[in-house]
Length: 66
Image (cartoon, rainbow, N blue to C red):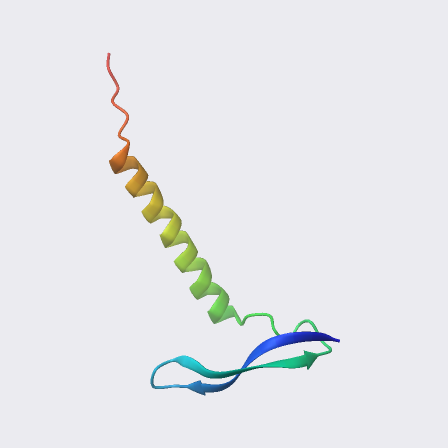
């Protein structure tokens, strides 16, 4: 069995995990994220990449000379 780090106490007001514990996990599908979690992480990843691309473009502009 694999050990999985799991949140055992979640505070809804601060939206943070207060207590984490390593538990035995026999099924690997349980730790997979939900659709909402995957969409949030995917959106944040995309926004992060686009932000880096814009910053790179602003710091290293390519001038086209004709």
